[in-house]
Image 1 (tube, each protein chain N blue to C red):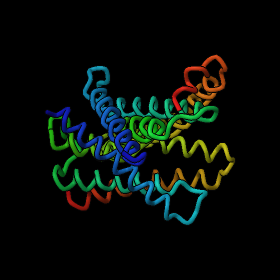
Image 2 (image 1 turned 135 degrees about the vertical axis):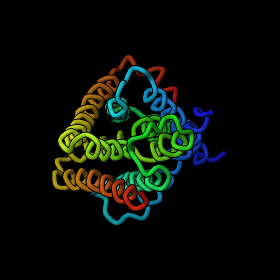
Image 3 (image 1 turned 30 degrees about the vertical axis):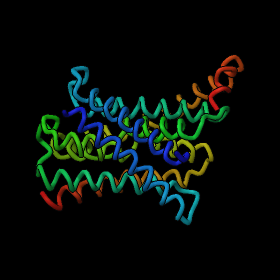
Image 4 (image 1 turned 135 degrees about the horizontal axis):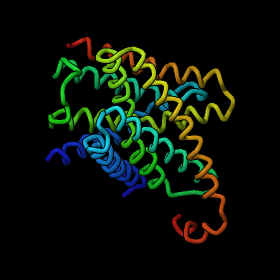
Length: 138
Length: 125
């Protein structure tokens, strides 16, 4: 298999896992209101992608793993289409103010989460003691 | 069965996103804006709008009881679009202190996705 095939396989596998996690959170009893689940997923996904980017600032991972985690897993876990759909529904079914609130909270929250994740990931990635086993991954 | 449908849609969605975004990435003319992610998110939001308008004509419905929606709405379009990469790219623009493109990026993605979704939904419903 070429490395391209590995990349596609890793993205497909990551996408399946990320989407299933999102689906299960959406239908879980934990969130009584669906947009809250989507908000939660978009926030945690942004945080983790920030972590990954921060980590990769100091270290390397094989391309398939990078793509599998970033593009596949976290890309599949978070979603923009549902965000647009929810904003549109809230606008029409509840109120424009709520829609604006939901949208801006998600956008600002996402940025803050990426930033926080980047700081954490970059801290972890720059730690020397983490290095030994990690270097064997390449 | 529903789990399988969500998984199928999600896997296909993520792979299609990668396929489309990397082919846009190869052809694009400007390097200062993450054009590929803008396109992917707008197309995905518009696609979900069209899908909902065509088959459901309403937003006040318990979609999660419908396998067809789970496969396409939650699975395919959910995974085809992405919020995490969008946030990361926006953060990168902020880090570069490229405020102009940061606001362009935010505006194009948000307005584009909302307009595409609404237009898609209203087109058929």
